[in-house]
Image 1 (cartoon, helix red, strand yellow):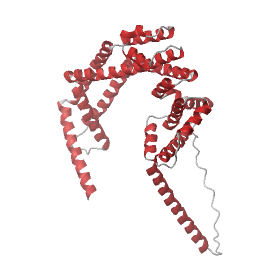
Image 2: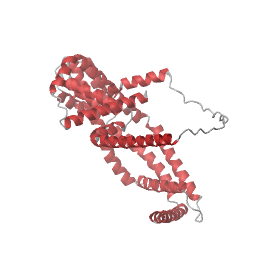
Image 3: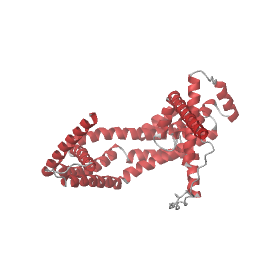
Image 4: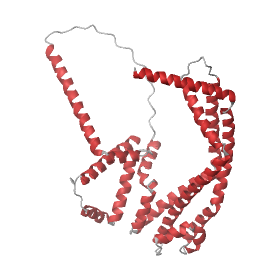
Length: 389
């Protein structure tokens, strides 16, 4: 299924690139009447048709990875150069195949009626067979296929928001509203998971830091000035150098506290505005399916200042429940709670960083660290001289 998804991504990206550059080079003049005919056929408005087409195209062209959408975008932007490179590549491949065919014909013409008798060689022993990789079962294939089909509904949140704003058919409004509520629920769940269950992940990260630094310290302690540093020892030295800078910064209470306030305020502001934006579209969608005139700008203002304007929401049971959830989140996970959470975790991280930094600035260890650093510089310089020669 992953191969099928990747094939669909490549085909979709290629077709979008051809359409885009054909339109840009005036080869294809696609008027708005084409979109209008498609909208009439689907019994939708033009804006609904365009947004639904974008959702499908983005879903197929983005693939399942994080970097694949950027790769598809770069492919579309550089499509003429990619096409030129492909044509050049296949041209030289064709020349190579033609040359191989000419050589085969020449060898065939040089052989007359000479028949070389060869002794029958014994059959080679059968190669040991290795176990074939396990093929995914029917349940895994079904799960991957469903994930592929549901990709447009699990991603592109803001495209769904724009479609909700412009949709006029009640069926599409309902679909957009359900998708947005699912996205909002998932974002709230992730936020609660981070706030309530962050300690195990932090402990795992601190243990990983101790393991990396412990291995680096042990390797450098075992180093003697008479030994030639290996590549592994060089990697351990770089790790120790990196963690020495990081832990040296983290043990400085003044700098850490100031940067914690700056980064904490920015992080809280981004999270708060993002969640409020999703709530505003959800309020607007509920009012729209309920037949209540409630413009989105009013919904956005009420969502951004929900502790002050919670009573300004339309008087429906669903909006009251959703507004109560939003109000509870804003109050419980307010700026005081967020900074309290950040300060407690930062104190634990700074304490662990102090322990690690004490090992890295130990006098005996630092002497070996400096000697190894000089030997690595000499070794790198000699390698560069050999390369220039």
